[in-house]
Image (cartoon, rainbow, N blue to C red):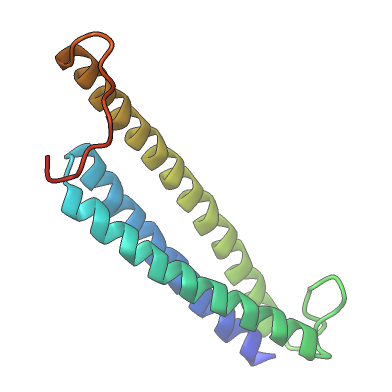
Length: 138
């Protein structure tokens, strides 16, 4: 049963790191810092892979452990461990909600920046000329 708590702790740590990276990405979006956006994106990909591996491990632990009921709740007699697992689950839910909020804000900031760039291009280019594809070095 201790394994489930360990996996949940690891998942929470990765989620908290993802949340921090999401906030760094938000700062980079606000300041239009392309290098920061790229760094955050790469780090988020890495953390998402780690989280997926941990989630797979969590599912294996839950499927292999006779101490866990079909509903996913621990059936252990260790009350302290049950409380810790419930606390970790609540913390995970909260971290996921916060990460979703940060991601939504980042999505809106990216859309706003893109709309601004498109508007500036339409003002700078003669009418009827396509904006085409722009390289980031332009």
